[in-house]
Image (cartoon, rainbow over all chains, first blue to last red; front, side, top):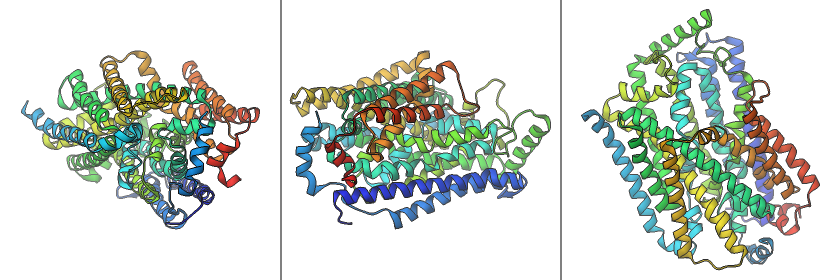
Length: 101
Length: 504
């Protein structure tokens, strides 16, 4: 658990969201190349376990790639911190009355 | 008769377990509810762990179409349809990775219980919040009815019971446990449902592969059918990604929006970001969710394709929706069939329960309690409990009654409810949490322009090439948001400091 100020948490969360978008983009590109790309290059003749290679690579491949990249995100990018904001809770209460108008 | 009894036994046990879960949770949470009823009933007191969070997300997301219509079409079109469905593999981690923590942090800070609470606190607009709540109520109710109809159909097709009795049996179960148990019961039963979906899928896989004489035999049948399709132009080339161009590339692009990226805007799933316990839970849920959603979506659709080796044709004019029920009822041992049929029923029930609880929260929390708060009236927690349970029950019963003979308008609205929710809410959540300048004028323009244009193109039948219309809804919504934001007043500093402290 990292001790972070309210502000630091937001800097961290923006970083995490950006990394998540990049991972999604990598998966989409891989999915496209493994599916349409492999089909374009080899057609349906190339098979893995009896099924078309383009299918196995794109579907199971993207799935496994997603799992690997999410594991990477969790290990290297995402950080643990307190979701509640104790130090600001007093300010939160007074702020809330005004913002609820 | 005895066959249908053997088949119904596992279903009956499963239903009984769900009911027990609902009542047990109601009993266990009585203390928490006495203190703050809506926080416990609608969001489970922010207590979900990683596993349950992942399962409730996936179970809500995978509906009757993932178990029935999707595999049915895959049976007809082949591997291209699995490729098409596999875009959903990003759905679980994207919503949690992008919105997950921010919604949790600002949700705690602003004491938000619903997705609309977040919208209200961010944009400071009661008009926007009310429109959002109404959009949610309309779309959730119609989607619920769609799920009820689908669930009842599969139930009656597989068991031989009439549509009406099938509907009533399983509708009573899902409405009852959701109503008494609230959000925590929804999350726990969703988890049970997700597990049963996986078990059902494995049973079905076993049956298809053994009855089809192994993967090589099945593939021989599929290759033969594809060869005929390529030679004659009749039927579909099941081994090509576009399935004889019946799934154009444009559709794949918009599928990445509709079932991938834009799903982060769905209020029934992103409300779960307000419900989990800590950052460890959300990290774990991303991992479990990605594993399970991939297994389920790729697995079920692949089974649809492989079932072609068992069931080579369906009667002339029959819908491909009948493929899975026929497989279950005719090619499986009755007890195994009973276990398998729980899968699609569970997919239906877990989607209904989440729509029901979130729909009820939109009425009670977002409209009624907010109205009371605005008038500075104190509300007794006991009374909040009564109207929360009452509202959930009424919405559920109304949806069941409408499902007996669904009016055309509801069937029609249901067609665009999924995309409509995304056109309405995708930018509101995404820009609201990541773009400081975004203001209420932009958000109002977006929900009206995005949803309005999406409905308009549906009504008029306008399309842009082979793209799905979600492209229009999302694009118009974005343009409206940007223009509106530039015209409207900037966000005031108090809101800014809560949602964007890094900018100060």
